[in-house]
Amino acid sequence: MPTAMMDTPPPTTSTKRWYIIHTYSGFERKVAESLRSRVEAFGLQDKIGQILIPTEDVIEHRGGKKVVSSRMFYPGYVLVELATEAGKVPDELWHLVKNTPRVTGFVGSGQTPTPLSQEEVDQVVHRLEAGAEHPRLRVKFEKNETVKITDGPFASFSGVVDEINEDRETLKVMVTIFGRQTPVELEFTQVEKQ
Figure 1 (cartoon, rainbow, N blue to C red):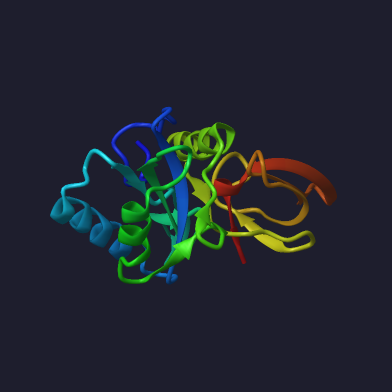
Figure 2: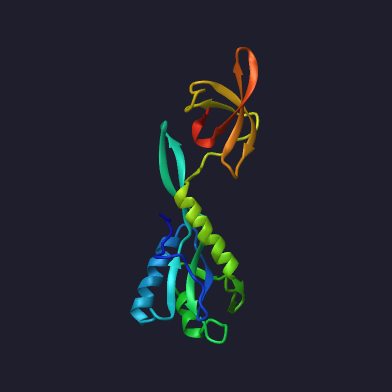
């Protein structure tokens, strides 16, 4: 299940478009909560749709244990679905969002926020769904780094990272077996830094 704050994947309709607002870093959730409260207080539920903080689950190793935590795709940014009039954000909505505490502005030029294209919205949704199905490992590996294998037939062996495939989250590790260097392909989750 996606960890982003949304009910359903964000569709783009002819009357509502997705915009990005810039916030103080670390205050994205507070901004989303404040904006939701302001929408209710001003009765603008029909003009402001979903408010989304795109996040994904990541696996970290802490104290020898695997811990799943949430990481934001775009720290300092919140996505918001706004009704448009003649292709522009109405002044009342622009001011409501812009005057929300800890919001520094819209992404776009000056007084004209730039909406996301449907392709950009689809990319965010795809990344949310992919992250929900397969949490990413937060540890970054480097070539020639020594790692310990923790899972699989080579568990307890140590080796040196030879290749890294970030997209597939796999490593080629050179392990010494019977006095010979042998390449072994492993998933990020099967090794830990030494």
